[in-house]
Length: 530
Image (cartoon, rainbow, N blue to C red; front, side, top):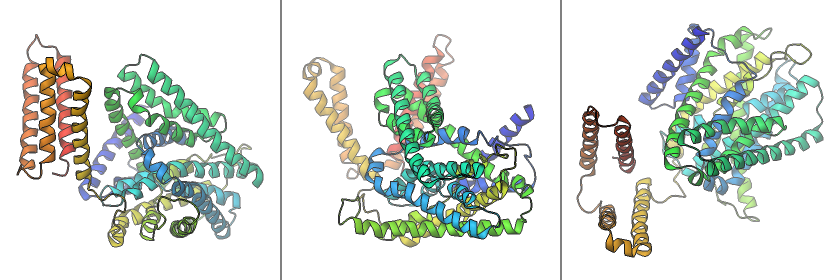
């Protein structure tokens, strides 16, 4: 037990080092982590790290999906709902079908049920990989919104296909009509249970006397409760987490106070980073076990199958996204669409951003070693090897070339004509202007008699004036930012010295340290491009 704990601590340090290396090289960290895990696996550096296949989906999937749903823009999600739905359901089913047919024809002894099982595993692209890569390049916001929304929904459809195929393999029975009805029921049940559990958490956050720590702890339990509840009633645990997460996220300003939101964001950011880091490292670390247990299939044949299936996936996704663009032009004659002329650039970029990752690995590892009758699950390790090959190749090949493809396509953003800095400036000015108007309208008597409120109003007017003329008054904002940061650092030194006074409470000092930290965060956000 102690050995396992030490190995996981070592693994975390390795993850941190590799992520720092990725940031230095300006490469998306999932790519470096997979390659790093692969190199470590060759030297048998961490031989005993394994995760129970039956728990892999439960451990990793709910919190990662919940975090993604929490930070997804509902506005953008709803705007691109038709595109997201077609990518998340139709394209996943088409991809699973193509993989099933190809693998059945290509691999000896590979049934159609096993083909659909493999298709359900490798069909969903990974949002973490794509969005991490997109941080280093300039792309239209709609592309990120579609990829993120697609990843939330396609996990559900792919895992439903995976679940039906696994049952078909284990029982030998598959009825299309029953499967189609069950598919709809699973989706509806998943969404309904997710919303119901989300409503229960809403009531607890809103009406119970919770503290900041309680609020954060409740958010950590929410995805697991949603997932387990939906799976217990044979609904989609994935859709339950997504729907419940979106429901609570849209109401976060009402159910959480400012401190709960700040601390919760920090906790979830750290947890998501840790889980993603672990799972991408596991992709590489699992390779020796997978190769050892290939059985009668030679390594050369397994590599060949993996290369062919990867090529099929890439081509199928590109044809599907470009085909969706053509269909959008056609259907725009009859219904209103978000963009009736999507062209070929956006679909090409979205198609090439189809890297596989966390969900594919989790699904593959969750395949049981033995079936209910005690027999070995057929082709399990070959499926694992093909999945590993798909993840590795799409992450490394597509991940490393995506920035080059984006640069080659050179797609202009058709949605935002203002830069992020200009948008932020407009928002700041609007907040300041409406704040002054609010004080004047609602508290005129208080303003006359309260000097502190008068000073607040003057401060707001001054900040508004500075914001409106910050490009015209010759202010050097680099110097302003530099001096401001040094002043805040000096404030921390003063607080450190004040803390030596035995008559000053440490908790009060800590409170002011937090206020200085928040002030620095606001400053850095305001001038992040300087």
